[in-house]
Image (cartoon, rainbow, N blue to C red):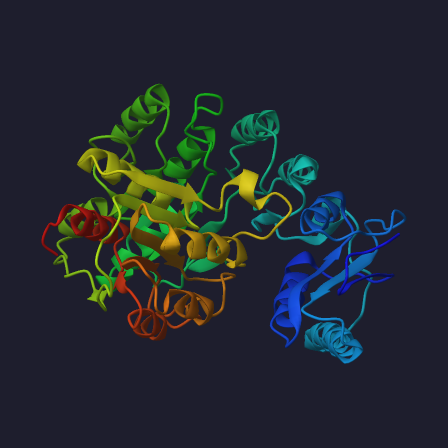
Length: 470
């Protein structure tokens, strides 16, 4: 097999977690002389990704093998030697970071066996390839446990079957593609760090939930429960099965004074049925259902604050735009699907030409990490958008929280430095998030105008295009 010049591919008999290998790839990509690096298990999806990057992997590589693929800027043997040494060092760092078990026992091989000794109230987190998620979730339900399905690309018919089975047992299925949840103050997935408080959230939207968490936290209001139900739950096929159970549970909690139901644009009939159900509950429910003519997420947060008797603060804005508008198009490059849809709705309402992309969509994350973890896909598109003659303003979101990029400003600030177009950033996070909200805001404000409110950022971007005031 003849490989292109300055390219190195080797197959190793080794295993590591896919997210951990993503960090290895990023570390090695930053080494001098390395143009591209991909270290991954040789699963069918990863082999497709490697082929798309132009790497030729030996035919006998299988899912239990690790592929190290490097593209170098030149053919200097010392560059290759240093790059391979960098891979080895990064893999050793992974192994040394694992805590040693005090009493090493063989881990359970199935969800059913793992649950034999579990507390009946413990929720089960499922994070496996989407095609396999239903089997593990069904085992959890059969054992009497709620389940959070982090996996994406789960077939719709599997979701419907699981949620019907859960409804019969009085159990809750959070997900599929549930990236954010807060259970009695404990964050799961990409959740932000928020103080306990009187608000409960039911979320058919991960980043929509995170936007509410961030705004309420800034106003001093905590959230003890955020029950993610998956982005398809308010669609016609699922019919709000998980949403109804989540609302029932929050209504039964005496510590919850207000419930917010947040969703991407729902099916009209499902939304109407859930609104009718919510009206029967003892706890007031505020609807945050995105759609034409409906309140944006910031307006909903402000209404919740007003209902609780909490003053609505001035939502923080830092930095300023650094370039004049030269094109007619608002380009939005989003990691958060709900934030992207909110921006799209506001652009349509204002009649502004726009091109808004949800880079976290299942089709774009097939075989690669979500852009909240790995910024590579967005950075590639950002460079093109900033130079395109029709681009007037660029808007991006930066979503902080557990599991997200530990320092998103570190890669975004260099990409925006000297940008040829004005840039507005929606920075969604809380003061206690591990990325340090204030530090991220300060860094980003050197190259862009930074808003906590995504709706506020979008209105500012629209104003720049239309010549409106700040």
